[in-house]
Amino acid sequence: MDNPFHIQRELRYGAPVCDEILIGRYFTIGYSWYFRQAKWTLEIINRNDYLLTEAERMDNFRADVRIPERFRAGLSAYRGSGFDRGHLVASANNDILEIQNSETFLMSNMSPQKPNFNRRIWKDLEEAIRVLNNKDEILETYVLTCPVFYFDKLVETIGDENDDYGIDIPIPHAFIKSVLAEDRRGKLKLWTFEMGNEELDGDLEDYLVVTYDAEQIVGGRFWDRISGGDMHNQKKNPRAMWDY
Image (cartoon, rainbow, N blue to C red; front, side, top):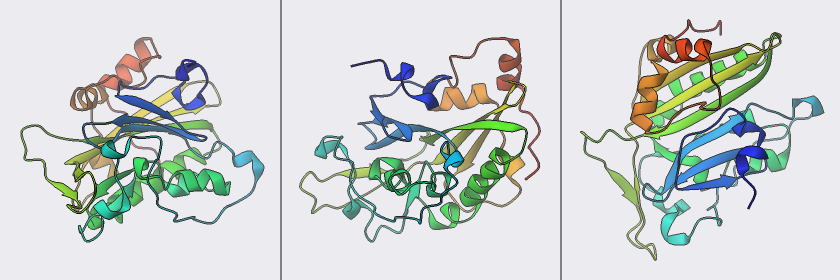
């Protein structure tokens, strides 16, 4: 198989390690068989916007058959759990073509999220990233999203005991988004956020974190194909939030 880093545009600047890379039509998933969900997702926001079309939200949630059944989440795992099927790659980030939007509803792109997190501050962050991407000076926006498990805390699960494989899906304690924007001068700008999987108050900028610290939590380097002092400084010193 060809190296996906050579053929997938969203992997141009690198990605953390994972158990399996699931190459999609419009984004890439780094999957964790142990956690039965993505370790990370990587996308370019609406990379087909030149088509000037718009697709409706498909809502066709379904299992990802690329993953062996005993390692994947199905719809039944979430039923009655009290948790949302939380998108990692947002549906509204991929609403140019129906097939593009449909791919975001694969269960491999979902993690259990508390409703008052998923429908509030997480949604606000997704919308703010689209505002960034729509700025005249921005050419492309890359988004790396990672479920987070803190090993000093109890990991709870959801699941369906009637499932053939008795699959339990661990509930992330938090989520990390690392946003890399390339502007018209070829300059790269980096922001990384860490948000607990719970109802959160405050402004989005309250959740900006040091990218190096986020890498330690996830267990893999972000944007590792970029070298140079400027990126080192941005990973070490969070830049101010963009106007959203």
